[in-house]
Image (cartoon, rainbow, N blue to C red; front, side, top):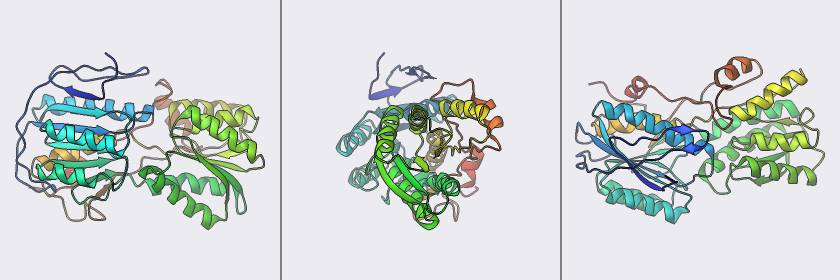
Length: 368
């Protein structure tokens, strides 16, 4: 079966992640609406629950992994009778298209929606519509500002600042760099670049040029090549994950891979190049900060407990509606061999992953 942007996963149809993508199957069943009234402390219900997913961007392997690991974790909950159906709306859409995705999920009588949002604010009205139906909503990957949504995210600004601090240390005060960013206006990109810029400004690093490569390795290579052509005398490249391998290939094409510092990514393809360059040049250095696709699994753990009527513990929610997940351990020159050994046999697109355990999710809620 080909890619279907709207899929239901019932008793016999969970996908599996493979190098070629996600294999899909579909079945439909109905489930009663939960009695929970939102906010992680509503009416108690034992389920089983129907969970909806709204994913408005499918242009990266990271998103495929995000969906795949969610399906696997959902299967575990299903075997325990906690959930019964996963309804997935997944396609490349603009904000209006994602609004339609969420309205489709509302009409599907889901009990909760896990959303990877295309905007921090433009979905607020449809979130309110879902909340009016008693649907719990959890945002992943990037935070939104709606009072009806609980953000379950890493701090994207902090995530980017880790790589930026490393690069600033490599190029020094007065260093000149180019920047390869994600999607213009996308909330995760905006948060990341804000965090990185703050680091560069404080360190006296000059960003001489930047452009957007939409978290695509091929576009990352093209954008980096073009930026280098216009700015040949640079000391470093700041590039977000999903594009670092492409940016590295652009440097290699110009014989600059060991001359120009580059922030890397915690993905197998990039780590293979990192390993090769380490063997060829003992002075080569890089960094990879994991951005875990299994944030979807962490969100599932949280939203199931919300549906069960559990109340958030004091201090668990920050900034009014946000649970900040821990950023996984950074891959550095010091721990590279250990980290690479764990994943070197996985597909090049595989991102080093991590999710909170069910027990950690329990810690966000008041004990009974």
